Image (tube, rainbow over all chains, first blue to last red; front, side, top):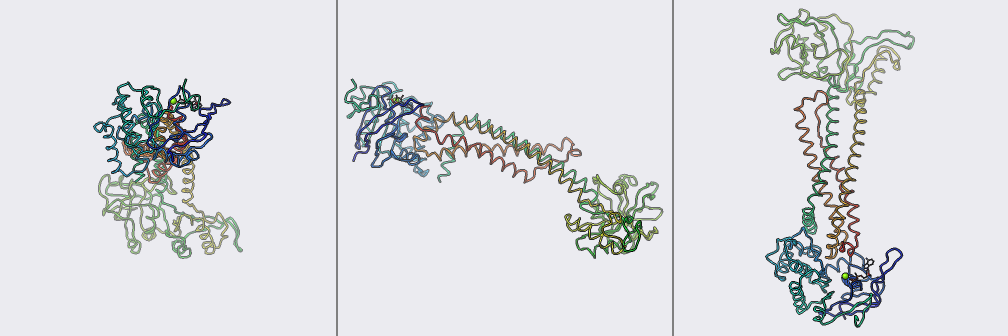
Amino acid sequence: MPIIKMNGLSKIYKTGKVSVEALRKIDIDIDENEFVAIVGPSGSGKSTLMNIIGCLDTPSTGDYYLDDEEVGRFGSNKLAEVRNRKIGFVFQNFNLLSYATTYENIELPLIFSGMPAKRRKTRTMELLDRVGLAERAAHKPTELSGGEMQRIAIARALANNPAILLADEPTGNLDSVSGGSIIEIFRELHADGATIVMITHDRHIADNIPRVIKLKDGGIVDSLN
Amino acid sequence: MRLLLFFNQFHRDLKGQKLRTALTTFGIVWGTTSIVLLLAFSTGLKERQLQQQHGMGESIMILWAGTTSKPFEGTPKSRNIHFVEDDPEYLKSMIPEIAMASPEYTNWSATIKYRDKVFVGQVTAGNAEFGEMRNLIPEPGGRYIDQNDIDNKRRTAFIGYETWQELFGDEDALGKTIFINFVPFTVVGVMIKKDQNSSYSGSDRRKTFISYTTFTSIYNRKYLNNIVLKPVEPSHSKDVEKRVDEVLGRKYHYDPTDEEAIWVWDTSQNDEFFDELFMGMNVFLGIVGVFTLIVGAIGVSNIMNAVVEERSKEFGIKMALGAKASFILWQLVAETLLITIIGGLIGLLFSGLIVRVFPMFNLEKYVGVPQISLEIAFVATGLLGIIGFISGFFPARRASKLNPVEALRL
Ligand SMILES: Nc1ncnc2c1ncn2[C@@H]1O[C@H](COP(=O)(O)OP(=O)(O)O)[C@@H](O)[C@H]1O
Ligand SMILES: [Mg+2]
């Protein structure tokens, strides 16, 4: 059984009288420990797909099974729980809380999952260590470089040992060197058994990812040309 | 456990919102201070009025004998009624709702002399309960006329504050001999300087009080000037008045419904009037206060709305990481409540400070001493709690209903 299974999934946005079909009849299976890249032109529906996979949004029609559960029908509280336990998000613009320290940022998902303070502390330090920023625990995100901020975001995404890591153009705001080191971290995580879905614009990155899903006008295509 | 995490969390969030937090807190401080001070000054003013009001005695009744205006069982109208010395005791024995009763004799103009100083004043005579009913409180060391004085017709005197000043200046009067119309009396007590804004026979400060038994042994009097009564409960006064007419009507043979046969001044009705007056004032102040607080609530609510706007991204991030809507909701409500409580406490402290400093301006004579009672503090705290909750709740609910995708895009 694949960890992600989508059948005939569509997403329609209605703004006033205009409705946009951001995704149309998507069928995707992703197995455990796959590393998948999603590519496609701007506006093709990549982020929409990512948000639905990540349970931030729900499909208009079609089925979505995550880890054998039909999450496409879940209510907002259940979805929050799924996001907390099974999904790790990494965003293009990092989305760290600017007033909190790196430590506190990483700790957040653990707080929401109700982990006791002692274990939370060990776990947070472990995660900081994992991304090589243990000595930056007390720093605010604004005191870090872009690459470092994204490493903190990855550590935060890993906090509750999620079933899938989702990354929406994680290198989009980074120079090529720090972008490369971020991709390197994802590769290591994949080697350690993680399931990763990553949106990218960068051909070089996509070319080195085992499976690539191409989106165009909300549908999956064989080739983008 | 979860609660602790929760508080931990919003403590951090508040730190990230210093200016807004400070502004909101200031608003609450301002509102609390206004309301608490309004109520404190109102209480002080009322106390001041009541204190003066009670200078003459608290919830007492004064009875004068009058003239009948109705014929009764064969007797014609326009008969004069007179009270005799036994009447107070008789009334007390017949009417259990009466706690204390005293006869009162007055000599309107007596010559009072100490050494070479002469003072013309009033001499008032009653029993031992008279002093208590009429709030005739001795300065430390002295006492009022007691039962022993009455039983033995002792020539002891309790003098008013001004009588003392006129005769003695600064000198200690206790144990000294004064002459009332050439009869020697020993001063056993000096009355404390009390405020009094009502009377039926002039200010007590200028009087000299003696035992009624002594009074009748010197002056030849058949009838009392009046009777002073105190009901067990102020609320019984109407009842007592009716019973007095029944009892005395039987004794003096007049129609108990005759309004003119005896006159009664029921001072608890003054209190009722004052209670109503101040009740009205408090209602007015309450309305002013409630409006002030509503304005405050709108202000806080506006600020919280702006906070939600500004922090949408934060809520989006938290939702993406698995925060439930209820967490966002209660976090914001708790933040507002905390701000409100802190602001309220500062406001209370600030009001307390003003009330403390106030006596330095020497205005107590006019407006009394402002008082912050426990009730005022509770009322203010309760109102603030409600306001904090309401003004936090609606913006918070809005925040908790944000669509995470849209919140993240901001
Ligand atoms: N909330 C929304 N309301 C209306 N239209 C939207 C909304 N989100 C995305 N869209 C539209 O859906 C399409 C896909 O958008 P998106 O998934 O963001 O594309 P990509 O990430 O590939 O650039 C676009 O045409 C976009 O304008
Ligand atoms: Mg996008």
